[in-house]
Image (cartoon, rainbow, N blue to C red):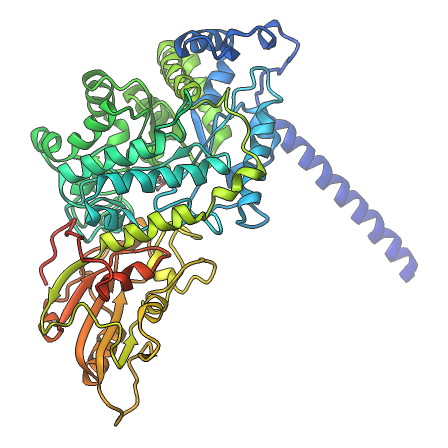
Amino acid sequence: MGSKDISKIMTKVLIVFFAFVVIAIGIALFINRDRLPSQDLSEERCEQNNAQYLNSELSVEERVDDLLGRMNEWEKIGQMVLVEKNSIRNLEDIQRYNIGALLSGGGAGPKRNNEPLSWLEMINDFQAETKKTCLKIPLLYGIDAVHGHANVLGATIFPHFIGLGATNDADLVRRVAEATAEEMAATGIYWNFAPNLDVAKDIRWGKTYETFGSDTARVSRLGEAYLHGLQDSSTDYYQVLANPKHFIGGGSMQYGTSRNKDFKVEEGNFTLNEEELRRVHLVPFANAVDEGARVIMVGTASWNGTINAANSRLLTEILKEELGFTGFVVSDWYGVYQVAPTRYESLVTTINAGIDMVMTPFEYKDFMSNMQTAIANGDISQERLDDAVRRILRVKFEAGLFDRPEATVEGLSVIGSEKHHAIALEAVRKSQVLLKNTNAALPISASAKKIIVSGSSANNLGRQAGGWTSEWQGIDGDTSITGTTILEGIKSVVSEHTSVEYNQNGDFADGSPLADVGIVVVGEKPYAEGWGDNPNPKLSEEDLLAIKKTKTKSNKLVVIIVAGRPLDISAYSADWDAVVASWLPGAFGGGVADVLFGIYPFTGVLPIGWDI
Ligand code: GLC
C-alpha cells in the first residue's frame, strides 16, 4: 500500500472522528438544554403601557401586588437568586433565567479594567439584558464597598470599620457612608454589603477589622449612622441600600471550630445561650431594623451546631416576626449549600427557614431547576415563594430601581472628589489611638533637625488599605491605589530644614548624629476573612528588627502599628517611647502625620481591648 493510500485512509479516519465528536457535542447540548419556559413577550401580562407597577404615583405595595400578579413561577424563582457576575456564562442568561440580582465578589471588576467608566458600562450592560424580558424587572447589583467603593480605581479609600470604630464619631461615620454611597451610585450600584454589625469578641478572627469593634452599644450606634449615610436621600427612594451583616453572632465564633479546613474562626460555631445572644449581638440588628434596614445578610456562623441560614428561630421567629423585618434576607457566600448533603435539601431547608434570596453565588441553573422541583413537590410552598419574591420586589421599588434615571458618565466626577478626600482625611486623623506616650516623644516637632523612618508599612498603600480593595485579599505594596503613604505624610508636614531619611529595614549609616526621632511604621500584610484567622496576631521578625535598629539611631522612638486588630507587643513596648494604633487607615496617610506632629490632637479611643 503506497504512502498516498495511507494518507487517504488517515484523512477518512480523521473526518469520521471529527464528525463523531460534533455529533456527540450536539447530543450533549440537547440533553442538557434547559427546561426553560417560553418567553413569549407578546403575552398581555407583558404589556407595559399602563402597567400599574411602573406607576411611581402608586404605593410600593400596590406596585408589588400588580407586578407579582403578572409573574410566572420561573420569573419569581429568578428573583431569588444572587449570582457572582463572573459566573454568568453569557449575558443572555440574565434574560433567559430572569436573574434578579448580581454581585461583584471582592476584586471582581469589569473585564476591561477597573476604571469608573468600565464599571458603569458593565452595570448598564447587565441592566440592558433585563429590558429584553417580559416584565423588565431591574437587577439589584451588590458589592462590598466596605471602606469606600474601593474596588473601583480612583475611588476614595476610607479607613476600615475598625478605624471608624476608633473615631467613635457617629456623624463622621454617617458622612463616610454618604460619600461611599455617592461614589457607588455614580457607577449604577445601589446595594452595599455593609454595615458590618458583628460585635468582635476574638481578635484572632480575620474579620475583626471589618467590625466597629467589641462594644455592642458602639457597634449599634455607628451601624445606625452608617445605614443612614447610605440610605438617606432627598428623593423618594433610597440613595443606596444598606445591608447589615452577618446575622448573627459571628463575633463570638470560637477559635478552632471552623467548618472550613483552611480557616480557624470564620465559618465557625458559637455556643451562647439566647439571652447572651440577644444582649451582645441582637441589639445592633434590632436597632438597624428600627432605623430602616431593608436587607439583612445571614452569616455562615453556626449557633450550637446549626448553621444560621437553616435556623428558622433566628430568621423567621426573631428577625421577621418579633422584630417585624419586612425587607428581604439574603444568604452569605455559598452558605446555603453547606447546610445539607444535597443542594436540593439545602435550598428547601434554608428557604423554609426564612432565606429570601440565595447568594449561590455560582450555580444559577442548578438553583432554578432545584427550586422548580421543590415547588412542584410542595417542599417549598407557593406562599413561601410569593412571600420571598414580595419582599425582594418591595425593596427593589424602595430603592427606586424602576424609577431612578440610569447612571451617566457625567456623574462619575463625584468619584475621588476633594470633598470625599477631606472626609477620609478627617476619618484617618480621628481614628488614630495613642497607646503610649513617654519621654515627650509626641507630638513630634515639625522643625526637628533629623527624623528617620523605617518599617514594613511606612511606604505601602497596600498595607494601609488592607483587604477588600483592588483585590479581595488586598495587595501588599498595591501600586494601583491613589493616595499618600504615612512616610509621604511625614515628609509633607516637616519644615524645609528637617532631614527625613527612610530605610524600610532600619539600616541607617553608623556614626552620623542620632535622629531626634525614629519613627517605625509596622504592621500586618493585607488579608480578608478566614485567610486572616491567626492564633497569635503579632509583629513580624522583619519589623521587630527594624524597630531594634532604628532605636539605636534615635533619641526617641515612636512605633506606629498599621493592622486590622491589636497585635501582641507586650514583650517589647516597654522599650518604645510612644506607640500609636493606626488600624487600616486607607489611602490618606497624611492624616497619621497630622496627629504625630500635633497639627490635630489624638482623639481616637480603642474599639477593642489592647493590652500593651
Ligand atoms: C463574603 C463575606 C460577606 C460578603 C460576601 C459577598 O464571603 O462573608 O461579608 O459581603 O461574601 O462578597
